[in-house]
Figure 1 (spheres, rainbow, N blue to C red):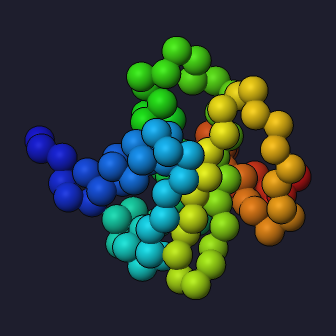
Figure 2: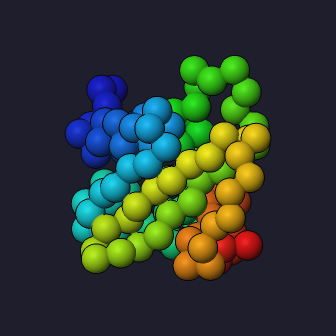
Length: 105
């Protein structure tokens, strides 16, 4: 079965996040791409899976961090390499393989 346009959009978004460190998508588009009816917990886990798949070309996939902030109807994603030690604002939210983790800690 071929990849649908929503899956392609998600793969492109997280490829951009991994390559540039940042990526932005409108909230409505993200919900539509992942399906608005999905459980909140599964929603964040699936986002992390797309991010993790985008790391496939990296020598070391473990330890990368994915964060986001909601602003003006957009999701702004930011990722950091394992060696990065950056002070994150408290309004940033972290996502990992278990889903939404915390708020800036």
